[in-house]
Length: 159
Image 1 (cartoon, rainbow, N blue to C red):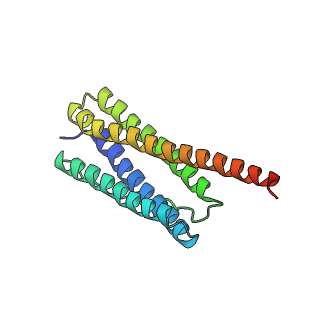
Image 2 (image 1 turned 120 degrees about the horizontal axis):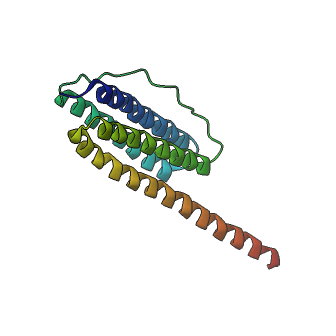
Image 3 (image 1 turned 90 degrees about the vertical axis):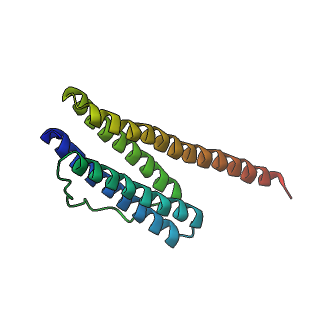
């Protein structure tokens, strides 16, 4: 049987994962509306992945004898200034999700809930991969931006 504290923390994480899904859906829609089809496709895929994470946690809570409950979701922003802002905010959100998962893991250690510790190890690894993915996107953008700036500067000397 799952401890109440763990159940409550995991129920909160279900909300966090669903909220992440909605954030990425809003970002994907913005990219679609602003002619960034590649970014939109990436973010549409990501919204589904976050929803799958929520479902995985939901099923785990119920499997352990708890009751997974859905909570109201915070409002999401639909306004972004640029494509880079979209991915900077996505990176910030992934860091937030990592902190949430780590907090639940710490609680599972404190409560000596070994099953939840094992369950959360998948999410810990997943978050490492997510942060790495978004950081690589930001790095690629920065590298391409630098190349475009150099190209633009080289045009100053052309006649």
